[in-house]
Length: 107
Image 1 (cartoon, rainbow, N blue to C red):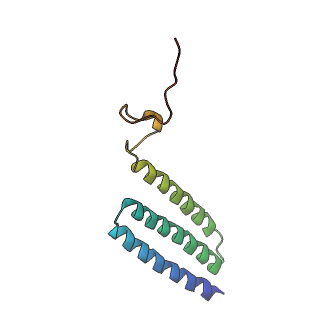
Image 2 (image 1 turned 60 degrees about the horizontal axis):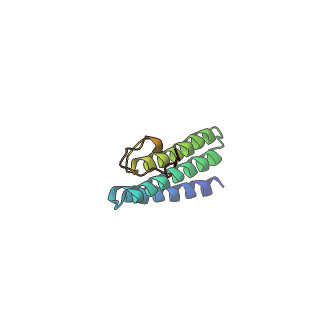
Image 3 (image 1 turned 90 degrees about the horizontal axis):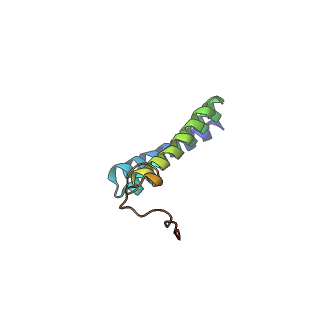
């Protein structure tokens, strides 16, 4: 069974190689981000397979940290492609439309 885990891990390494090629070639930033997500997901799967193959369950913590970092990278990417480029929607410049219409007051 250990050989099967290592064989699958080798196949996942090939998907990482293809994803690295996609990161280098583009064409869009979103394509590059999706490839980076594939690298993260494959890396997590490889760590889990190596944990099962080597009977080293402390590596599950490493996989959990990698999963959290992958989720944070998506948030960072989403903030970087926003028009303002950073910050909360409440901190948007005046020329950018607000997320909700202004309240009307009858004074």
